[in-house]
Image (cartoon, rainbow, N blue to C red; front, side):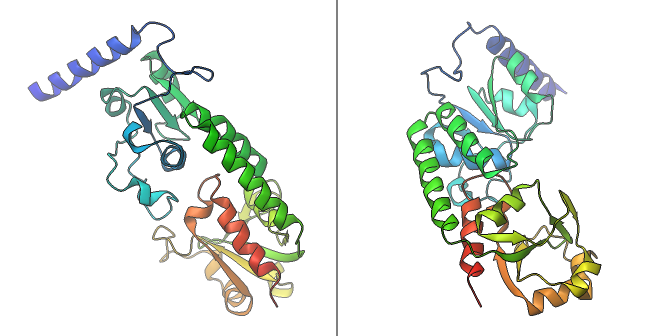
Length: 281
């Protein structure tokens, strides 16, 4: 009990100190002050922090930063980790918190009341959204030149792929038997690779098994099959004989979970892998 009391007393003192900080002492969108104690709350935020921030300025990353679906996992090795609980974050006294979904919907207001600046990544539904997010986030992390260089590089890679479009059809397939049609980032990814999305139904939905029985795609974009979080022992439409036949008979492009788990520059890895197969036999 005494330990718990000291813990909460320290938390209250930290919050009180941060909340009373003079206005303008925290970095804002146009503030030249570069944050020096940055925390990312989830693995999507981890990617941006690990890419654009030098290690001495990273206070902590999320517990998922080294998982196989984290693209920048190699850079996270040895970096302190913190749970997305508000009290654990506040006690570390960061000057900037970066998040996508970590901490829940109300955590931004809580941190801001404590005087801690927060950058929300938002949700990328298109490749253009990703480019906009990179251009917006990199300056907030103190690395605008790297962000601009990355945007320029991505646009050049996309332009090269567009010039070599093949227009073959591709079915996006996950171990849980889910696919995606127009209106999703997956759809954008397939189009950028010069492919036609086999799924014509908008949004996310189960595999169209009946349709697959009589009309096959030219290739399969198999995502997350290399991860340990794909519920391999559970039944799903991807285990149906019709779906299994596609995996055996059609060209399969394995997409690493780290390429597609979040919206970021690493989506280019998936796009280029698909484009390389788009011109196959």
